[in-house]
Length: 310
Image (cartoon, rainbow, N blue to C red):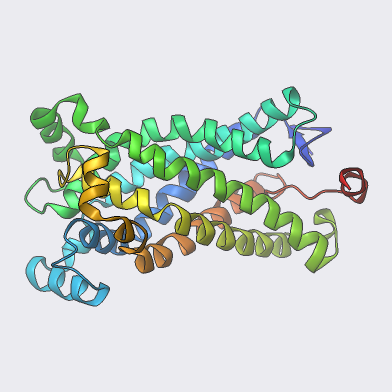
């Protein structure tokens, strides 16, 4: 295969120079398009987080927004989602593959889960720096109808009112939400792929058709998104609260929301939102890799590697 050397890193073939660009472009397209597709659900989630008394259920939030603001309200912030999450996806997937190769070369004897965690965390730190300004505008546009119409007028208005700090006010809680999310998502995905091939399909990845490989990608992506969304829901509530000035600091946000509400507020819609999105992202991402002549994502340990670990 072009651009791929015959040497294994964490159970996968070492990528050539063009591999990281394919992963970056695939990450941008998969993240940008899927996040735009679920904009209406995201609007519901953000409003339920920011105005929990007014919107205490999904149905009441939907009917009230439709009655008060019309159908267009559900597509508010779509441009910031496409470009913001597109950039984040490019950094997240492309840099994950880069750091996984780097750390696998340097940390030869370390546990593979440690390499997954370290690679995804390193990539996510940079990905969220790129995402944060877009996220700041998006949350305000969705929860404050009179703030701005979208990306073009939202950016200058936010800068004029709050300066550069306004774009990065939620960076720390954004890291708090997305760092563990990304670490859990990538690690769960990698281990799920390995489990499915070795314990369910009982065949090597190379012996399966591309359709079967993409099916494994969907199952592993669904598991990864569901587990990660459950664990990071508290940080997601804090981010929404800080961006909409419901609290001025992290501690005040936690105190105002309440410990129990941190874990339960908007959780059902977030599971509905995140699970399918992550599944679609992995499907689109791996489809782009397959069309580019590359294998699907996820390591599968050989019998020799498994026996070595026992």
